[in-house]
Each structure stands twice: as structure tokens, then as C-alpha cells.
Amino acid sequence: MVPLEHVIGLSAILFTIGVIGVATRRNLIIVLMSIELMLNAVNLAFVGFNRLHPENLDGQIFVLMVIAVAASEVAVGLGIMISMFRNRDSVDLEEVSLLKW
Amino acid sequence: MTVFSFLFYLFAALAVVSALGMVMNLRNTVAAALSLVVTMISLAAIYVLMEAHLVAAIQIMVYAGAIVVLFLFVVMLLNLRQDTFAPGRQWLVKSAGALAGLLVGAQLVRLLSSPLPELPVLPEGFGGYRMLGISLYTDYVLLVEMASLLLLAAIVGALILAKRKID
Image (cartoon, rainbow over all chains, first blue to last red; front, side, top):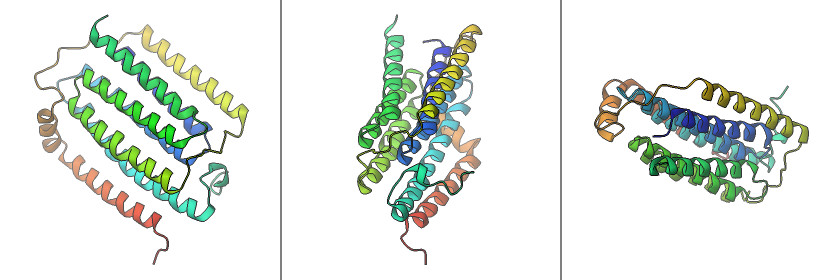
């Protein structure tokens, strides 16, 4: 088994890539995918720490819950995206700045 | 290096490369979604290596199956194959990259300087459907019910949002 530090390091790297995607991209669908990537990184950390405490499976149950939340988030996010495309004919995040300060 | 750790580093490298390919793909949205599939499947392989078999199966079914297919469906439906929006502000991209690199470097230094405890020996049936199912439907039955409510709310919300006219 590889040391747990490497698993958590992989999780940190994937999470950071997701943060960069959310912060820099303007295409809404890529931003949603980056959010999925961040959730996956968190799942990997959950599974890794569950491997450290194998007497119960709390970490893996949390992973299942995160997957359920991710599925509903994608459904609602893509619904928002479709209605936004219908109204503005674009999925550019720079054009949807009504709630920005 | 054992076969086990070789496989781990192989899939870890694959996951990082395909995640970078997803975020940095500035032309083709479909290719970005397919890179995301590669990341998901590499993570599922890592879950298998860490004895989380049920989680690996669900990762492939729900993430690589359902969620990415939903993404591809919307990309094709709205005809967004061409990604014409390059990141607008270059200084923002550069400073975000520098900050994120600094953060992840600090995390890695912190991780490697204070080692975590050694991994213990696993009990029989760890991560299988039996152990996980028993735990899920006894201790965490309320959590399962809440997840079902959340999914119901998401279905209704997505239907209302995507409807052409609310009557």
C-alpha cells in the first residue's frame, strides 16, 4: 500500500485543479465540470482516511452521500444552464453578472 | 516498487493529466467532458486499490455513467461543441494559478513533513456491499431518507427550471 500522504496529496492536487477551473473559465459547463472534479477530490480524501480507520465505514458512506448531492447539483445546474441559454443564447459567465457586485 | 504502488501512481498520473486536460481545454467541450470521464475512471481504479469496491462501482455507474452523459447530452443539445470563450483576464488566470500552486505546495510540504500513521490491517469484508449496506440501513437510515428527499427536490427543481413556460 502506498503511504496515505500520497493519496491525500493527489486529492489536494485534483482539488486545486478544480479551483483553478472554477476561478478562470468562462464557459458555464466547464465550471460545472470543475465543481465535479473538486467533489471527486474530496471523495478521494474521504476514502483515504476511511482506510486509516477501518473499524467502521463512515467515510465511504459520506462518499455515497456526496455522490447523491453531486447528482442533484448537476441536474439543477444543467437546468439553470438550459434556461439561461434559452434566454440569452449563450453560456458565457461574463454575461450573467446580475448578482455580481 | 510493488505492482500495487505502480498501479496507484499510474492511475494518479492519469487522473491529474486528464483533469488538467479538462480544465485547460479551450477549444472542444466534448473533449473536456471525455477527459473528465478518464479522471473519474482513474479515481475508481484507485478506490479499488484502496479496497473500497462498492464506492468504485458506484463511482463508475453514477459519475462516469450518469453525470458525464448528462453533461454530454446538454453539450450536444445546445450545440456548445466549440468553446469560443477564452479566459478573458490573463492576469486573473496567472494570479489564480500562482496562488493555487502556492497553496498546494504548502499542503504537500505540511503533509510530507508530519507523516500520518501507518495504515492498519483491514477487517474481513471491508468496503464490500454487505458491510456498507448494513451500516447504511441501520446507523445511517436517516441519511438515506434525506438523500432521497434531496434527489426528489432536485428532480422537481430541474423540471421547473428547464420548462419553457411556468404555468
